[in-house]
Amino acid sequence: MSAQDFSDEQKRYLEGFVSGIQTSRAAAGLKPLAGVGGGGAASGPDAEHLEAMARFERDGKKLVNEEKAKRDEHPFDAYKRLKREALGGAFPKGVDNFRWRFHGLYYVAPAQDSFMCRMRIPNGILNHWQFSAVADLAERFGGGYTHVTTRANLQIREIAAENGPPLIEGLAEIGLTPKGSGADNIRNVTGSPTAGIDPQELIDSRPYAKAWHHHILNDRSLYGLPRKFNVAFDGGGAVPVLEDTNDISFTAIRVKGNTETEGGVWFRLGLGGITGHRDFARPTGVFVKPSDAVAVADAIVRVFIANGDRTNRQKARMKYVLDEWGFDKFLTAVEEQLGSPLQRFTDDEVSQPNGQDRQAHIGVHPQSQPGLVWIGVALPVGRLSCDQMRTLADISREFGDGDIRLTVWQNLLISSVSADRAEELEARLQSIGLTSKASSIRAGLVACTGNTGCKFAASNTKDTALAIADWVEPRLSLDQPINIHLTGCHHSCAQHYIGDIGLIACRVPIPDSDDTEEGFHILVGGGFGADAAIARELFNDVRIADCPETVGRILAAYMANRAGTEESFAEFSRRHEIDTLKTMAEAAGGLS
Image 1: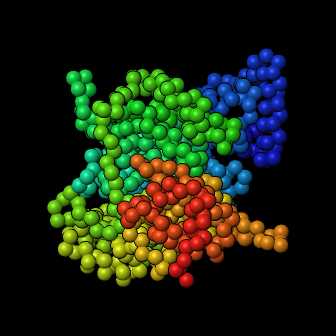
Image 2: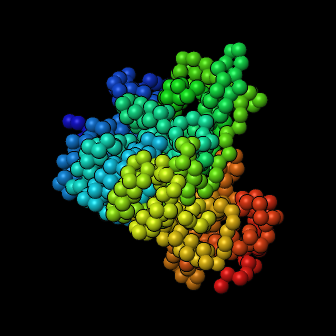
Image 3: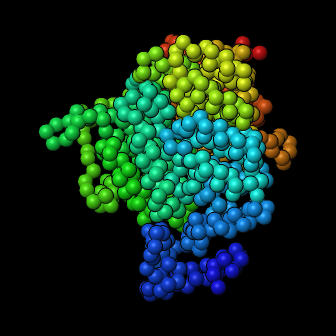
């Protein structure tokens, strides 16, 4: 009999039985039973993962269900079954919902009785005909729209079971893939959206993001990690990439060089970013030649594969290996895996990362190519209809170089537009309900899917974000960039902890009732890059209907009490205690 001949309940019983035997043997000082629970030597492309699982079991620990699912039937070996069941109209049951995510298909019930499909778009850049073709696929197989994500990616929603396989195969036919875009895998690699066109950039991130993308796609052993994994390349351009929120961050800097070391542009290596767990990728003192970035990233991931926690999903990210080991031990293991020492420089031997423009992803900006501009298009909380997508593809082809450049700010750039055609292009955007001219409030608005499409979310994030913008815009004229991030759950896909103002969904108790309603906790003072900080909670249990006015009062308090027009919201909120900020916000007037 194979593992698939048992029901999920039978599997759990047998796994518990075997785990109990192995635990008892370990407690008695006996070796584990060979060939049972990972006792035998692992082999094949998944050997690193199987050996890591077996080591935990040899220590008498119990693997989480997701690890058992990967061992029982690797998701890539299950595609035939996925296709057969989906074409028969069946959504996945049990751990198959986890397995199918390796193929980019998320079953998102009960929020929606359908699949969501997320793609891989290295550096967030695709060409106009791919963008238009995605629109066709979303219209044919999905809900007729897409979302731009906070990883400069696209996702399609409302996909019927039988439409899942033709959708992911259709993506492959246009040179895109959703492979490994979900579950315990290395997610879409992000890079500078203005790569190759930015006057201030130090290096074009595209070749390195693409090299890492293809490295992952062609090595099965880089799938099935203890948990998901994020990597980002910042080439020093004007648009923030938020690389310090990733497990691995590569940040372009300049090295002075000496008789032993080649100078020029290198990447500063950061490790351990996961802002949902209140941590940024911290500089390691290590610097990487761009040509070595893929090899170094590979070595880091393999140390994580071998040592990441496979018994507790809450502690399975790389951050927790770093917390337990410390950076020195971890980097020593990376050097052993790499087979060569990592390069270290002192602070006086390297430059600081380039400064960035928090609103360079919106509006018209000069390129390094004379007479050309990139134009950042504001997308209402990242949502696009298929008709809008096709028109944007046409605009990119007619006005620019044919590229569509997605950003982590849930919008897109059209590049290489003649400066004298910017207003003509703006008119075309307005004809489809879009614009490149957004207020500070809309330019910095970020929202995850929310409870209209995600089973984990407690509140409606996207509609609340738009309601905040609608309420604030006519009442306040903001002259500084403001980032407002709304996330629906503890996974923090919209990274609420790094926003000037961050909102995380909750259920708010209804007075004199046992019931609850949608709402948010509201935080202030987050930041990223050189201004990195984790936001502090200002108000909790705010009813969803009260969020727009509450955010408006916070902003009004800032405008009325800041120390001059140059003081940013982050600076203002950090120099006051929470109780003082609360009093200021509650006293804010003139907003009726």
